[in-house]
Image 1: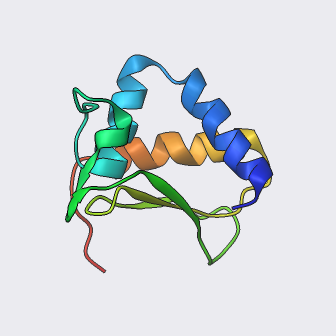
Image 2: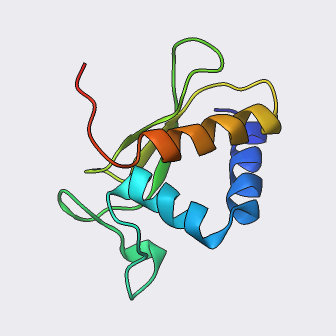
Length: 102
């Protein structure tokens, strides 16, 4: 993802409701709550694991995906902030509650 897209991502995150933010946390980390010591203390597979965003390959406009063991988000390329928000909301509503096997 480009710097512009990272900016879009954080702009979207600040615009989300409390419940949407909790759904995103569930989607990206496997937990809907921030640790008591703060976001910097997120736990992953090997202890404290910082949240990270990675550029995702594949087709433009694909859904983002998450690696909950690593608190990592794969962010595809989007044409606009509006498209990114639409895909993010879809991903957290449809992909936050279970596992998909390919």
